[in-house]
Amino acid sequence: MSSSPPALELAEPPPLPVELLRAAVARRPARPGEVPRLEVRVRQLPPDPRRLALYREVCGFPEDGHLPLAYPQVLAAPLHLALLNRPEFPYRLLGMIHVRNHIRQYRRLEEGATLSVLAWVEGQREVRLGRELDLHTRVEAEGVLVWEAVTTMLRRLPGNEERPREERSAEAKAALAQEEELFASSRPARWSVPEDTGRRYARASGDYNPIHLYGLTARPFGFPRAIAHGMWTVGRCVAEMGEAAEAPSLTLTSEFRRPLLLPSKVVFQTVKAPSGGVAYRVRSEDGQPHVMGLLTTSSSPATEDGRERPGA
Image: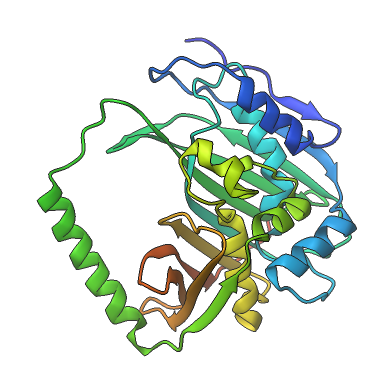
């Protein structure tokens, strides 16, 4: 069995625009390939105050001295792209779809903290539409694990058969009925999402993927207009949940359903989930779903004797 490629140790994250350019010119075979374990780490990563201020502004967070719950995902994004651009990775980055995100925060992070960030990818699994793989992110402060996430990506592959339409329709109707019952008691908030949201979030995150910038740059990729960044939508939801998202230890799950075209008018809803926590969703005014998720409190990582364990 061949050994995994060596881990990358970087002094600072690579610029996201450079990684996007590398992705645009990369060539990969169309057939499925093995995904080896690939790692990249930056040991000293202080958040940039200017970009953090832009992130707070575009998502709606107050200046409270702490990093918003989803902000470490922004810090890790260049490392994710660097992993997926490595020659050992078998698929083109462009065309991969962000389908789910799972975040665990073990304590609130001060905005001036210097963080150590490790990201890795390993393996994949077959799903109905192609292959799914997980990007793992681990954030430490002073040697202690404080935040981690799993970012699930989908690579559609030719030849993957769709299930019969009748079967999909029955499942979809049952899931929709259950979801509507859950949110029936919620008080919806209506948002107007401006046309420049993608450009504003790009200035905060460094993610200048053309599908998020203008209709002209999004159309070659099959979108009639620019679409919002998925993690902008998540960040905006977290900001709207206020104090519920300011607890020290939290778990946030998000499922991305459909792209959010810009500009748009959407409906944001929250409700107490039967299993605990706050369920949330964003849908269009005509009922098309964009994002659905759950925010819950979580416990700190610990060893068997109850002491907080250090990071790896």
